[in-house]
Amino acid sequence: TAWSGRVMAAHVPLPPGLPQLLKAGTRFFSGLQESLFSNIAACRALAFCLRTSYGPLGRNKLVINHLGKTLCTTHAGTILRELELENPVARLLAAASQAQEEEMGDGASAVALLAGALLDNAEKLLRSGLPMAAIREGYEVAGKEALRLLPSLACHMLADLWDTEGVAWALHAAVGSKLFGYQDFLTGLVAQSCVAVLSPEGTFNPDNVRLCKVPGGGVTDSCLLQGMVFCTEVESQSHQAEEARIAIYCCPFGLASTEAKGTVVFQGAAEMRAYSGTEEELLGRHVRAIAEEAAAVVVVGGRVDPLALHYADKLGLLVVRLSSRLELQRLCHTVGATPLTSLVPPPPGTMGYCQRVYLSEIGSTPVVVFRQDGTTCPVATLVLRGATDELLCNLEEAVKDGVNVYKALVSDRRLLPGAGATEMALAVRLSTLGTYTPGLEQYGILEFAQALKTLPAALAENAGLPVNETMAMLEALHQLGRANTGVQLSKEGAPTMDAAQEGVLDALLVKQRAICLATHTATTLLSVSHILMSKKSGGPKVRGDNPNWDLEPDS
Image (cartoon, rainbow, N blue to C red; front, side, top):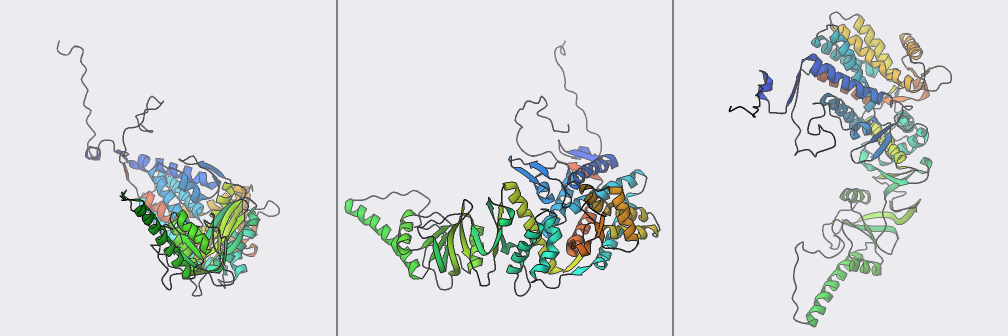
């Protein structure tokens, strides 16, 4: 027969509705189970991963990124930045946490934990039959009430932004939560650097606090320098200049050359000698013209021509090469120079000034220092020391968080009690509000209060304290009106303490932003009804050992 030995492929029609309108390969999820409950489970898993790293006694995460770089840190921003999340809802939660980290420098873990707890509690209410609209309305009411109550919980105010001891006291909790054990030393350094670059008008730019990581030594060997430090060597034979005028060029230190190849035809040896001599003479005039303008230091952003360096050594110029254009801009800001685009004599007003430029060695690393002691310098550099690269990265994260918290304090100087005291105080007040609120929204308010309690509970759990006993005692003290009571991380004595007296404080702006972000993230994710995921772009996959190498991971 005509059909013998032949197999026809059966055409399977797509189900009616939206799937028929989508391109082949697009995945479509709808309903509570597919679009919400499964994704809440992913957010719960992400929050649980960050829960064990919350607080100063949190445990490290060993993360190996796609480039094979190994990171050992408790910093939530670094963990989320290096993770490659596939779940779309978990990625939105990670984006909210990273936004908190970039804007405020602290509270990234709190955003993820609070939003994860809100979603987890919302799932319980949904499975109990509560409408989605009532849960979202309850969360929004509770979030607005929490933001309204925050200013009334402020226990201190930073009186003077130029007071180094007061600033260090305010930054103690933010820095200590990232690198516990060195918080006293680090907060002093961070406070000195922030006060040093604070303008007389009271404006603060975090980019003016520069970091230079030098391996070797201990954490206490870190120091603060007025000016900038670069991990590089000088190109010239001169290694030091005092009270130097500085010319900065974005171009190579030599004659400009064309990108295309050219051919020069000489008619004889005399023309060849004249050609090379003219080039050397022209380059010599350029370098001598720079020296005649009283420039002692030349900083270039391109290659250094050996012949130009020879003339610079004869004239006693100190030549430094910086490959980063951003570093050139920051150095211009430090010394008050204007970058030049060609190797010409510096016009009047374009050169900068530095009290001392010298080549030094920290440990076994050569560094070039532009130092401005005794004068007002808009940039300060923290030289961080550490035995390992992981420790240096943790130091960098702690210092950056402290600098960003100081930026928040410049905008709002009010301080809240830390160690979970603020969260428990809000939870107690919101529980009272939910009890007396009519309608179905009260369940959302009560679950919002329960979600706030997960933050002090995580602190107690990571500190090795009995969680149930600690939380019961903490809530009882807050019911009696002691709003500054927080979790005592030390195992000696009572599990609670007065956070305001112990100096464990959080910036009000940081806490306000964290609660706002967590609430908005939770209510946004709860309003998702459908998820549509297009097929990933890219060419055909490489055949692997897996027999199903050509299928999607979840197919």
